[in-house]
Amino acid sequence: PFELYGPAALAQCPENNLLPDTELQWLQVPNCSVFECDDPSPVPAGYAFGINENDPVAVGQGVPRWYCAPGYVGTAERVC
Image (cartoon, rainbow, N blue to C red; front, side, top):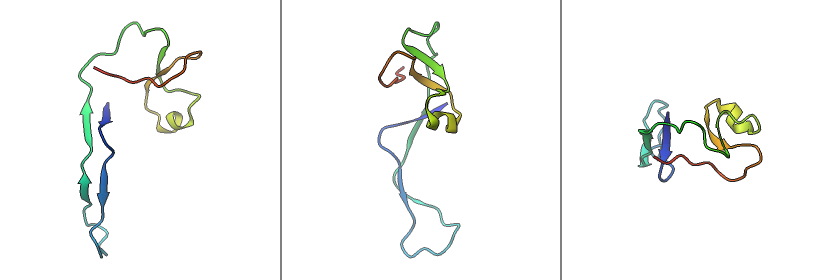
C-alpha cells in the first residue's frame, strides 16, 4: 500500500483557466512511498490490523490499516 509522508500535497488551477482538461499546478508535491518492511507476526498486544468497524472513515475507505485494539487508546503508526 502507498502512504503519504510529510506535508499534505497542495495544487491549484492556473489563474483564469476555463479549460477543464488543464493539469493542476503543484505547489507541494505529495511524497508517497511503498512500505519496505513486513508487518509484525504475531500482531503485538494492543494493536489490530484490518478495517476498524468502529471508525466510519475507515469503513468508508475500505483500506485495512493498523489501529488500536479494543481497550487501548492512541494512534497506531507504522514505522519501518
